[in-house]
Length: 162
Image (cartoon, rainbow, N blue to C red; front, side, top):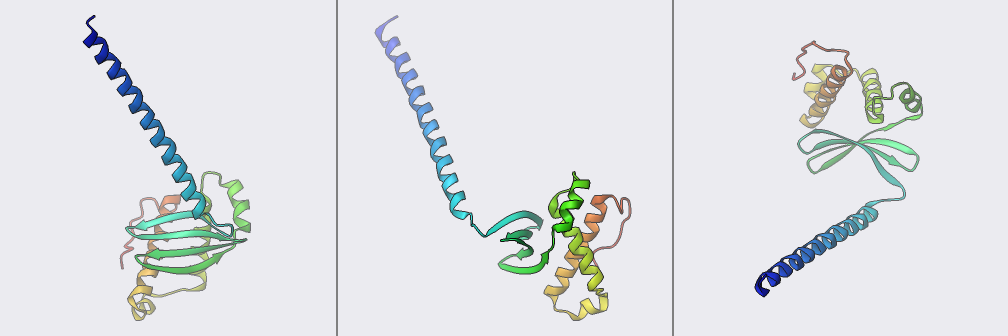
């Protein structure tokens, strides 16, 4: 082989080694920076347990604050406290329903409590401001979707957009 061919092969191999080293360093740096940012966002007193997306820019969060669990809704630039959730009975239920998530059970219990305590008729909803009415409609939609998901209303087509 001529000396130019050997130089070309050596340069190519050297270039591949340098490229592999750069990729490795980028991987290590990304992993380190990601771990640091994750550690800086953690708190000793609060933790987001579950997140349920309700559509674009709308979510419900199950948050553990010390020993309490609360539900928080966020939509756009607003955040609203929904309720405090008692999960002592849910841990027993989860042993029976291994396939269902914690948040699903807690949210189902919240919806049951809300509908039992606040029997809101459609005439009362019309008198509330539009924000509260949309929250009530969204919770009703979620309740209906959860029922269908759990198999309670399969094939039943209700008009949930009142």
